[in-house]
Every structure is written in C-alpha cells, then in structure tokens.
Length: 326
Image (cartoon, rainbow, N blue to C red; front, side, top):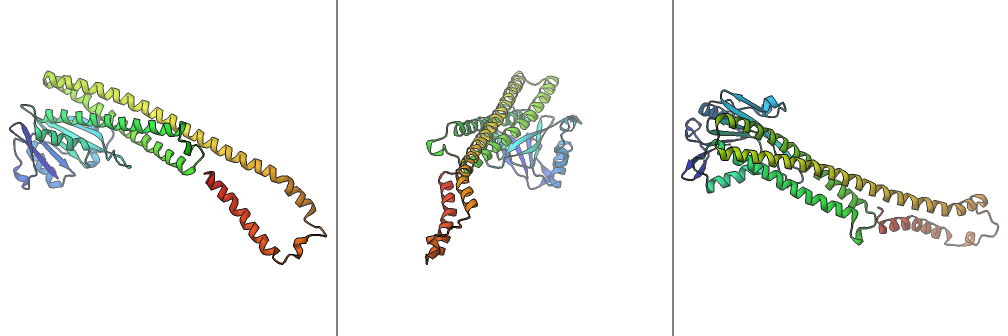
C-alpha cells in the first residue's frame, strides 16, 4: 500500500493514489506499507532513490542500515509491533531522507505510525517537511518504548508481589499457579529484550541523524530535539537493562520457591515411607500366615478387600489435590 502526505494549510493530507504515474510532486512524506513492485518503481522515479528490499532491510550490519547513497540518507531501525498482545514482535523499518522528502518502507504496522499520522492530520508546524516528519516518528517511537517499559515494570512488580507476598489462599503450593508465573516472567523477559533491541537501533539512527544535521545546518530547535532524543534513548536503554536484571532475579526467586515446594513434598513422602516401613516389615516377615484368620470365612471378604484397595488408591489422590500438590 502506498500513502502520500501533502501539505494542505497547516496539516498534512493523506491520499492513496491509484495512478502511480502521477504521484504529487509536493509530497512531504511517502509511506510504503508492504509495497508492490509497481509502487517501488513509482517512488523511485519520483524521488530518485533505490527503495531497499525486505531482505536488505533485515541485514544487521551497521553499514547496511545507516548509509548515504546518491545524496539520500538511508536509516533502518527495528521497531516494536503488537506489544499489547501476548505475541510481541519486532520489524525493520527504513527511513529515507531525500532532499526534504521522507520515504518510509515497512512490512508491519508499528503503532507510532498511526499516532504520527493522526497528529499531522490535526496540525503541523509551519514549513513542515520530511525532516519534521522524521523527528515526529522517532519521538513517537521513543515514547512508545517508554510506555512499554513502564507497563512491563508494573507487571514485573506484580509478579514479584505474587511470589514473595501471595494471598492467604495461595500460600500453599500450586503447580498451575507456578507455571502461570513462570510463563508471565518469560513473556516479560522476551518483551523487555525486544524493546532494548529496538532502543539500540533507534539510538543509532538518532546518532546518525544528529551527525547529518550538523552537516546540513538544521535549525537550532531540531538539533536540540535530537539531543533530547539521545538522552531519552540512553536513559531508556539503561532502564531496560535494569528491568532485564530484575526479571532475572524474579525468575531465580521463582525457581527457588519451586525447589522449596518440591523439597517439602519429597520430605513428606519420605516421612510417610518411614512411617509405613514397620508395618510393611512385619507383614513381610509373617506373611499373614496365621491359623486363625476370621476374614477367610467372610462371605464378602474378597469384595471388601477390593473396595479397600480402591479407597487406599483414591484417598491419597484426593488428599494431594486438597493440598494443591497436583
């Protein structure tokens, strides 16, 4: 899908042209979402750049993500997608500054794009261009990462509370509860690592843009905004590292609680085995070989013995379920 944003009064108007041969010359931002070959060629003709392929965007070398070609600046960052779901993912997004026009290439829908699109539709600063849109996108991405880390931190605190200060009804061992906590810890660890990866890539992009801004004489406000972004990225990266360490600590604590619970259960089984050992020893020695055994004359002795066997098997199972060991 190809979306073109052109300035109208104090806003940027979005359009989705059907005739790719007549793209507007005054377009400030061209957004390529899962583009077709025809859309790639149309943008290349209008802007005079080479649109990178999906495989090229996924390369991890710095030289393949941040470079200048034919006067255009190519910057590829890794952004978060579906962070509010149980299956967050990361996706590469390429920002291309050619002249004063911005081209974005993506194959997913990071939330900051929708936020910036809505913001620019309400109003833009005078003389908005591709650099303005790029800074808005980078700022929205950083804010989004901060929101994700804040929510992840609150969730980790709740998990820590469930481990160290459980409710009275949950103080006894419960395998299902433990598995849910371990799954929650694993998900938060995965989310935090993805956010940190995204922040590292965004930090490289902001550093690259800052170096280029000094060369092309961007405005003082833009350079100040870039410096603020660099500080925000550095602080959020440190916070993500702290959160990763905290998740590791919570995971170790949870595994320690599980080990203690297992040790208590094994200890109980050992005590029960010791308690039953003397009767078992006596029965093994004598073998129940007595001359006078009234049960041998009972008419219903055999069915009663079968019922007692079933009861002896069911009773421990019910007891273990009641104690939440199963």
